[in-house]
Length: 127
Image 1: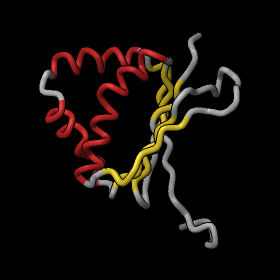
Image 2 (image 1 turned 90 degrees about the vertical axis):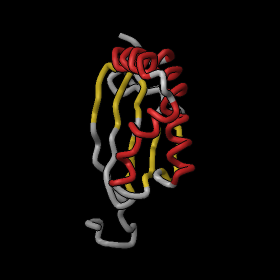
Image 3 (image 1 turned 60 degrees about the vertical axis):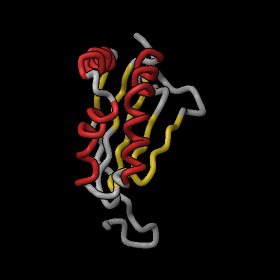
């Protein structure tokens, strides 16, 4: 079994997150080629507030192992819906994009959606 990457946690301000696990190097190369420029453009347009790429600092068991985690903070839920539009603007050769993106998904070993919320640490924990 190949090593696993965790990608991405998508954090809407006040909202949700998603995380999925994939195989290593080719996935990251494709992700970096297409998704990072899209995230950068979405940030320029104000849809994305910020995003952060993480790598684990310690070895974990194979069942929980990941190589990268990306946390994306969108302005709001509606702002998260412009990715496809921005992708088409940045990458007009949709045939190549789709072929390479399909390869990225072929490398995906598991996919998980993880809803998360920001809470006030001084509150009751239910915010």
